[in-house]
Image (spheres, rainbow, N blue to C red):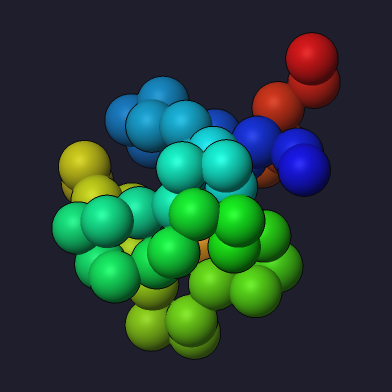
Length: 54
């Protein structure tokens, strides 16, 4: 699964890890995040993320 980067603070959302701070289980694709999910570091929404080219 593709990783996504916050364009504001450079936080990387890694689907393999999820986001334990917001009860997002490992294996959750970025596209499947809850509508109210925000960057755990700076608080912006999914519209401020871009895919990471690996």
